[in-house]
Image 1: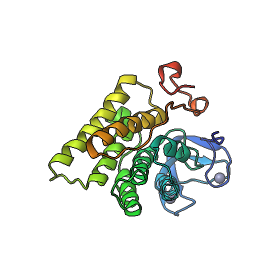
Image 2: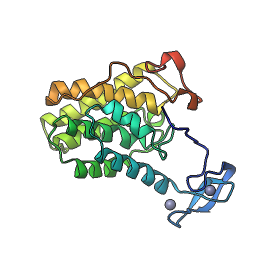
Image 3: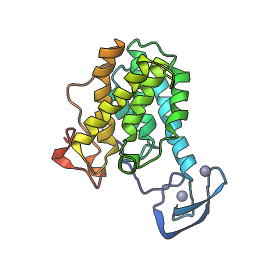
Image 4: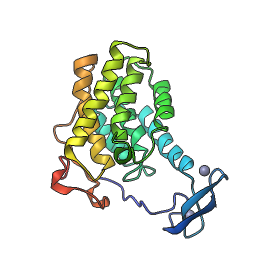
Length: 234
Ligand SMILES: [Zn+2]
Ligand SMILES: [Zn+2]
C-alpha cells in the first residue's frame, strides 16, 4: 500500500506551497543559498532543487543498502513509497539505476554495492528533470544505461560493454517511446527496469527477478495518468 504523497506540501513543515507568478530571489531553508525560485510554503520555507534532490537521492541509496531483494521492480516500488520521492521528478533518474544495481548485486552480480551506488548518485544527479520531453531521451532509460555502465566498468574507450550499455538504454527508450506520453516517471521506470532484467540475463548472465504482474498504485496521484493505455494500470 502506498503512503499518501503530498506533492504540494513543504518538505520541512508540510504546509501547502504557494506558487509565484514571477520568479524572485529565495533563500533555501536547508543550505542557506539564494536562488531564483517560484514557490515557497505558506510559512515561507523554500528548498532549492539541489537540496530537494539530495534528500531523495540519499533516501534511495540508504534504502538500497538494506535491500535483500533481487527483484528490481519490488525494490523500485519500495523506493517510490519513501516520503521524499515524488510522483514525478528527476529522483527517478537515480531510482531506476539504484534498484537495478541493488537487485543485480543481490542476484550474484559482481559489484561492490556501496561505491557503485555512490557513483550512480553522482552520475544520475547530472540528468535533468523533463529530458523525456525536452531531449527525447527519458531519464529512466539513461539511469538503466548508467547501471549497465557501472556494472560492467564501461568507459568511453570500452569495446564490447560500450555497445551493451548503449543498446540497453536504446531498448528502454524503445519501450518507453512505444507507449507515448504524457510522461509518467512511474510507468517509464517500470518499463526501463522490465526491459533491463531480460537484457542483463542474456548479456551479463545475472538473473534478476521480475514479478508476474506489475501494478501501479500511484495512478490517482497522477493528474496525467493515461489509464488503460498504461500497461501497469490496475
Ligand atoms: Zn514550510
Ligand atoms: Zn538548498
